[in-house]
Length: 391
Ligand SMILES: Cc1cc2nc3c(=O)[nH]c(=O)nc-3n(C[C@H](O)[C@H](O)[C@H](O)COP(=O)(O)OP(=O)(O)OC[C@H]3O[C@@H](n4cnc5c(N)ncnc54)[C@H](O)[C@@H]3O)c2cc1C
Image (tube, rainbow, N blue to C red; front, side, top):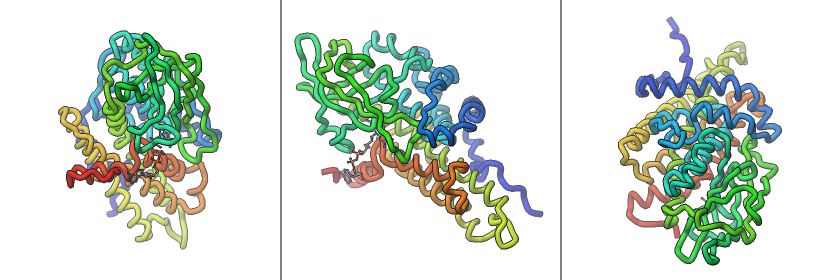
């Protein structure tokens, strides 16, 4: 007798048995919310380059904004639960997961980890509730992979700071109420909280993107922006501070990308089952099955890697090069899966009616942001050899 097909590609290795009940419940809640509020509209939002800003308070109510942080209105969940929420968000669209990653792991984490008590009290509860939106400005027009050479500069002026420069490719930039901005100073790299409306601070959204279309990406410009010293993140004392934030966000990405992979594979499995060519379902052709099997193996092994890294994170002993292994492997795997799934859908695969090519286009950004594929390769290379090949 032929066995029934799996209802979820992760059932192949019974991955859900690796996850605790509470984490599974959180994952199911996020998935159900997205199925109702986002999935029916996401193709239109991608086509019209719309970020559903009205959903932000709902995401706050759902508890996913800064969910792995403790106190100040944050949910304080495990790393595994946070990863699984990212996976569900990205299964719908990487743009939405990017919003949640930037809000929680970059904007909120930078304040939670490096901020003063006043800064935490002022901003974290509002950001957790989705009453305010945050962004994180590190990349510049001329400095992406090498932020140590950043040109944005803050200079002391009496008790204040004067900030000049620009940041590029900043997720949430044009809709953010608050920007965490990294600048070089006489004393080294420092972080500043710059509120929307500060004199001399403007934003310009980046248009004509072929990726992350349901996400706002912007340039931030600072022209003699005067900030009090209380706007500086007091515990951020070097470039290690923004890099620490990025490590947090990459952890969400290494789960999230698998969501895009799972959704693509599910779409291909459904399509292959119903599409008839040469008198039979294309899922019965060996060449199709080879693609499906290879993708399922890659997706499931990526998930085991993600869950292993979550355990290391929960034990407080995850190292940056381990996060690099996860980001490198899982984003590559997800992108390969999304592209391969597109081939199974034939011509229909280029329509927004089906998710794989939208996921693939989004994953092109995921491959590049939060450290490019090449940079994470060099991180792993350095860990293996002890030799830095960055310069
Ligand atoms: C949609 C989107 C959203 C983003 N959101 C944010 C955000 O919220 N905040 C933020 O600060 N940034 C954000 N970024 C920026 C992102 O982090 C940068 O694009 C990324 O760090 C790479 O920088 P770059 O684009 O300047 O590429 P470059 O650094 O110019 O790299 C170009 C190419 O050269 C390669 N390269 C560079 N150095 C080396 C080397 N030493 N050895 C080998 N190869 C090398 C790179 O791997 C890449 O292939 C976002 C980007 C995108 C696309």
